[in-house]
Structures are given as C-alpha cells and as structure tokens.
Image: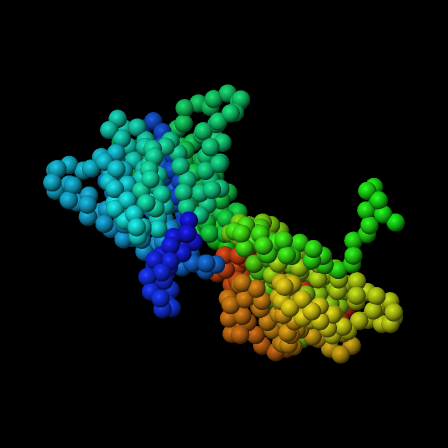
Length: 235
Length: 235
C-alpha cells in the first residue's frame, strides 16, 4: 500500500514535466500496530508505542491512541505526521460539533465523520490506518476500521497496522471462531478481552520487528475511559 | 550413467539454469521471494589474550523474525572463526566451503592453518561472484603469526583491523567500540566491550535482537559462549 501511494505521488509529479525533477516523497512509513475488541457494555483498544523509520526507532513512547469523548477513542498509525494532522483536524471538527449541538458527538457519528474526512483527501490521502472504538447509543461496544481513503466497516474486533496481519488471524481464532467445532466459549468479558489484547501484542512483538516497547490500552465503559500500559519487548 | 530412476549428478558449483527465466519473470512483474537475512549486529575485537567475536541471534525475512535463535558465529577450525552478516544461506555455505578448504590444507600440511588461508579463500570466492554472494564478515583467528582480525565486504575487499562491527546494527555497535576500545584489554574487559556493542545494536536496530552469542579464540583454543546473555528487556 505504502509503495503504491509513493509511486503514485511520484508519477503525478514526473509525468507533468518533460524535465527530470527531484522526487517528491510526501509519505513516511512510521509503523505501529492497533487492535480493538468490542463486547457487551465495553470496548478495549490497544496500540504499541514504538515509532520507527526503516530499521531505526524514533521513539519508544509515542501514543497512537487519542481520547475523543468519554465514549470514543481513535487509534491512528502509519505516517506519523498524517496521524497527528488527521487527529488534530478531527478534534477541531468535534469541538465545532459540541458548540453547535451542545452535546458530545456519538461514536456512530464520529465513525461516519472519520470516513468523510479521509475520503475528502481521496487524491492526496492521509497515509494512516485507523480504528475508532467506542460505545454506541445502546452502550454496546463498537469497533470501526478504515483504510487510508475512508473505506469503513463496523466489526466486533479488528487489528491494523504493521503487525495487523499477525494479530487479525489470532483474533479470528479466539473470537471469530469460524469453522471451529469446539463449543462456544462463555460471553466475552472485559477482563478476557484485555488478556486477548495483551497476548496478541506480546506474540506480535516476538515475530514483527516493528512492534514493541509498550502496549497502551484504553478501556471504554459507560463509567468512562481507563488507561493501562504494559511492557513489550524492546529489541 | 543416468536414467529416470538414477538422475545424473548435478554439476559442481552454482547452477545458473534459471537465471534468464527469472530475469524475464521479474520484468513481467513477478515479485521474487524474500531470502532470510541475518539483519545482524556483529562486533569483534583483539584483546591481550586473543580474539573475541560477538553476534546477536535474530534472523529476519523482511519485517518478520524468521529465527529467534540463529547462530551467526561460524567456526572454520580450532583457531579460526567468522561472524557473518547478510544472507543467512550465503554465510552458512561460506562456512561449509572454507571449513573444508582449511581442513584439507591442514591435512596436507600437517600444521595449524594460518588465518590468511581462510581469508584468501573467502575474498577470492566473494570477488569471483562480484558481490552476488551477500556475506559481510568479520574473520578472526589466532595462529603462529599472532592474533588477526579482518573485515570482509561482499565484493571481496578486506582489511585488517583491531576492532570492527558489521551488519545492519553496525552503526550503533561501532559507535560503542570507537568510544570504549583500548589496546591490551584483558578478557573480562573485552567481553564487556563486545557485549555492550552488540547490546547497542540490539536495542537500536530493529533487525537485531533476541540475545547475544560470544566466541573467544586464544592460543589455547576456542570457546563458543552460546546465549552469553539474554537481557531482561528482550524477554
């Protein structure tokens, strides 16, 4: 995805001019991994705090999660400058919403707004993988995931980013349970969801070099947002 | 003397029969598979009792950790070893070839084989293949001429050094060596120096990690310290 976008940006620059022009590289891949699990009356979202470029580490403590309201969290990773710019722009839009409507925005409306904001930059996209996690109007957990240009879907659980392709199959196995003959487990609790998230990130950090340092988890319940941090591998 | 049941022996040396096919496949857009790269930190130094070589233990394929317990210290004979960075297969095959060459040399001459014999075999072999054999090595050994440490690049160039670092973690490791290397260190000081140099690579280079191996060569023999250290932050 990253390489395609890079070459697209370059093609637009070089095709226009018959002269050789210096390349324009507006994107960077700074890695990062996100995962979220929704349940009855809660949602948990986790992100590692490692920020990278190539084989180097920029930061071991870069938070990819942002609290938007008491019921909604956004996680954003990929091109770090785009993540920052996008969440900043989103904050502004949410403030406008608050002033105009005199109430905080709902998770569902946030999810739609994020999609619209991403698609607005369809031809010069924010290079970000995004997850919005929150409680819906019935206090049910909701996880929305996005591609860089705003394609979105609501899920029960979702992993994105560098180690997304490692974590998603794990979550499919323990939560999706497609084609499995073993009896259905009991109803998912917040505590069990936290354990799955921790296990997922610890395993991902074992095998994905861009994932590590710390796991930051935000837990959303009707009582509000709690935050926890866990150590991951540092090498 | 061949049939369908008894195929002919393959020609010795590399087979180039698929080169043209593969070049045309790549031209048509085929993506060749990724080789396992040691993505390594190797560091070595001469101390007052001999040679010390250290490596990390991670092998990667792209951004995935392919092996968490890789041996990157390759023993050539009782008095010669090298630490290898680059394509894992090339380093392994290089060890096999040079070890056979050196052993035949020992049997023919009835004497301990000097380090320069292994070094010459390596550099000539690498130069013949014009950098396509991707080995970046630190060759160390003890012989009747003294203690020797050489670094070797994939194109076949080499030079004799007092201390050196190689691989993707070499920038971090060499910084430590340049700052802290002293002549006439004792064994304990040398172990600490190389351990810290590898640790610098392991912490700062994403493609290095999972532990530290050491190899100490003295006139009385070779000591291979597998898993010399697995620092707590890695677990």
